[in-house]
Amino acid sequence: MQFLSDNQAAVHPKVWEAMRAADAADTPYDGDVISQSLDQAFGEVFGRECTVLWVATGTAANCLALGTMVPPHGGVICHREAHIEMDEAGAPGFYLHGAKLMLADGESAKLTPEGIAAVADPIRDDVHQVQPHAISITQASEYGCAYRPAEVAAIGDLARARGLKLHMDGARFANATAFLSCPPAEASCAGGVDALSFGCVKNGAMSAEAVVFFDQELAATAFYRRKRAGHLQSKGRFLAAQLLAMLEDDLWLSNARHANAAAQEIVASAKDRLMHPVEANEIFLRCTAGERDALSQQGFGFYDWGDDAARFVTAWNSDETAVARLGQAIAGL
Image (cartoon, rainbow, N blue to C red):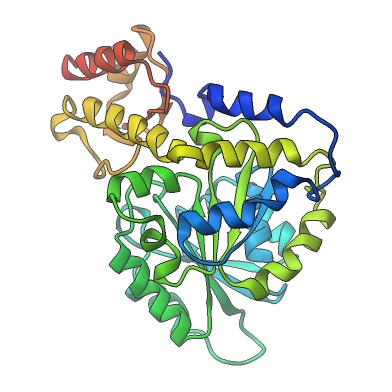
């Protein structure tokens, strides 16, 4: 009964079918028919022109997108709990050749215009200080909370006013969009997002993420950066096939809805243990070491989150019986 991470979930059968169907000779790298269809397919999802690159990991998606926005002497304003700060082993600094992450605060790991300004305003406009060139927000945040369209738009307005680019880490973008019940564009590009890391691996894909550029000028250099970074796979059609399978019939949204619903069932038993609102598929609960041991002994897998908390993550294929048993076990603590 694993609730460690949605990375642990199985690959969706429709993704396997799409990969098998792609197992035929075609142009290598991204010249195949499937890869060439990504721009149009994602354009239909977001209702606007976009350029899409496949990559194998979310880390690569985030860093390749930010690399188009930020020079080596520049900075990226992000939340201090952001994945690019806490969980990517310095990859942004590596891919951006030394660019700095500039850490801001905000409730539930979400940025606000005020929090961004608090970081940017004290910086002098001279060569002795790192100048911000981009903002990176996470949809849903590291604590599973979704930016409302108005919140994204407010940050987008600030970015444009200050001449900054806006990146969105969407490792769980599907879960956020499903929670918001709004068009995908309203949760992202309509608010001024220039590039989105559109996550699929956590949501049923095997090894494919999409970098969706809404700013076409940024996209122009991304292809070269992907090759230089070692992410231009020779049989890219297998990654493209996964992405198209996720988009077909809105599989990405139906998978996310299942994961979100499972999380809500567990939350119903959490009472006053909740540390953050549950708006996607992550649950953070106050739990003592003894309580965590009790849950582990009953067969539940999850992550300890500091000394007095635990994180549980549901997935597109979370088993209904396991979800019900976890809710009962939490209620019985």
